[in-house]
Structures are given as C-alpha cells and as structure tokens.
Length: 324
Ligand code: ADE
Ligand code: ZN
Image 1 (cartoon, protein in one colour):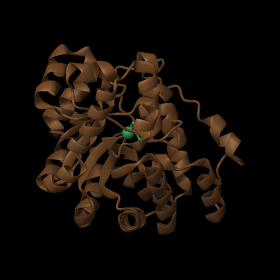
Image 2 (image 1 turned 180 degrees about the vertical axis):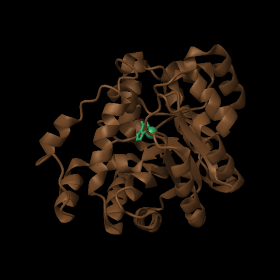
Image 3 (image 1 turned 90 degrees about the horizontal axis):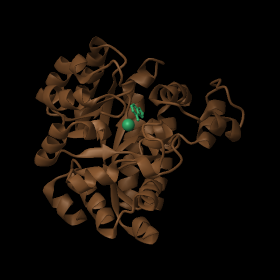
Image 4 (image 1 turned 30 degrees about the horizontal axis):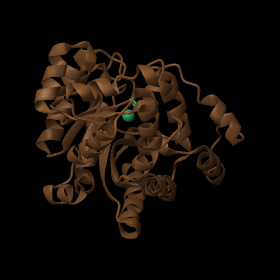
C-alpha cells in the first residue's frame, strides 16, 4: 500500500509556499540577505518546531519568512518545493502565498509573485507539473488592509486563479471579510477559505454562506454539526484536509484520533494535503502514509482521496479528464 501511495500521481490543493521553507534554505537565505534570525544551525530550528496550537506555529512561521527578500529567494523556495513534488509524484499543485507577510517588510507583491511564477513556469517546462496560484489574505489584519492586497491581485489577475483566507482563525470569522470577498467574486476569482481548523462550525457556515467558498480549507470541525455534514455531502464541497498539520498543531491528539476516515465514510469530498510541510514533518506522501497506517484506510479509500484531489482542482474539464 505504501508503494501504491507513492506511485499514484496526485494533486495538492492546500499548500502554503512559505510553509515549504526548509531549515537549510532558511539559514542560507539569512546569510545571503544578512537577515538576523534566532538560530545558528538546523538542529536549533528543528527544536523550535514544537507547537501547542495554530498561533504558536504562526509566530515561528512569520519569523522564518523574514529571510525571503528577493525574487530569486522566492524562486529558490518554490523550486525546492517543486523538487518535492517530483519525489511525491504530485503532478498538479495549487499554491497559496501570503503577500501581506512580505509587503509589510517592504518586499513587493510583484517580487514575491514573480519569483514563484517563474519557478512554476520552469516546473511545467522541466517536469510537466501544472499549477495555480491562490493569494491568501491574513485574517488577523483588518479588511481595509486586505482591500489593498486584493487590488494588487487584480492587477496581476492573469497569474492568480483565486483568493483565500488564512492565519489566526479564532476571533477572526469569515464575516469580517464579507465585502472583500464580494469584490473578489465579482472580479472572477475562485474563492476558498480556511475554516473549521480550530474554530467551531459557525466559521464553516459563514465561509459557505457569506464568502461563498468553492472549497473549505481544513473543515475538520464540521463533524460537530449533523446538519452541516449533510450539506457538505449533498453539495460535495471539497475539504482540503491536512493530517500532519492537525496533529502538529494539536487539533487532534494523535493520528488514531483524526477524523478524516469518518468524513470520507460519511460521503464528504475530502482531499489530503500537506499545508506547511517543512514545519509539519513531511510532504504529501507522508500525510497519506500516516493516515493509512493509523486509520485502517483501504486501497479504495486511498484511490478515492486521490481522485477527489483532481476532481476538486481548479482545472478545466479536459485536463481533469487527462489526469483522472
Ligand atoms: N498559514 C499557514 N498555515 C496555516 C494554517 N494551517 N492555518 C492558518 N493559517 C496558516
Ligand atoms: Zn493552511
């Protein structure tokens, strides 16, 4: 089964490019760009990756991103992830990036986007890997600030398929961004949002009803509402579940307690993703392997999860057909 997991071509739909920054590259970029970080070696960095919840991770993740300054840094970051895609047999990937993490440090939207985009273009040329870019708004910031980011996304619309919402979930419900997402929808962007990662089912309901998301990122708290589960099943709204992330951020105590198998058995459109793999002990195959080993997944379950990932991707019918 592990060989099957490794050999199946897969799509990844929930991946923060800043979350693929490996300790080695972090140290190299810190040196290259003369950025001070509180670590001198890889072991120090790895020791810091002990998280108690989402916020404890985000604090370290934003600090790590401070080494990314130039277009070529974003290129290196993205290219390293592409090499992991090759290892993991990921043939299509949809990448989040957080412009506000960079613009607040004086690094322009254009610089980050161009570095990422160039690497993705090369990935297509060199390996045939297809991709989409999704811009995420940081929900701990206010809506006014996010409008500036949306305006930049509109400027580079031809390179951006959709917009999403990430960062500190608790206390920052989707309804805070109603007007922002109304505008994004009118501009023709696909819409996703992190919801029900740590916060209760009302955040998932708001993401569906107010932001009108086409996919829910995480969504694992849906199990606390029978009515919501029924709706997600009927409408087949994709959930981009991230098992390693949920364990590392203590959403579930351990892999045996993860609910992905229950969600799948109920008939939800569930996918498997790696979220921030450099921080959460493993890339996509490792996420599949961890749930397979702990939750008695069958071969049919694995195949269904992989098919769901292609069916839920923002790609046209012809490409979907080719991949499925
Ligand atoms: N940013 C990067 N990873 C995230 C996650 N798992 N939840 C919210 N924001 C994030
Ligand atoms: Zn995420």
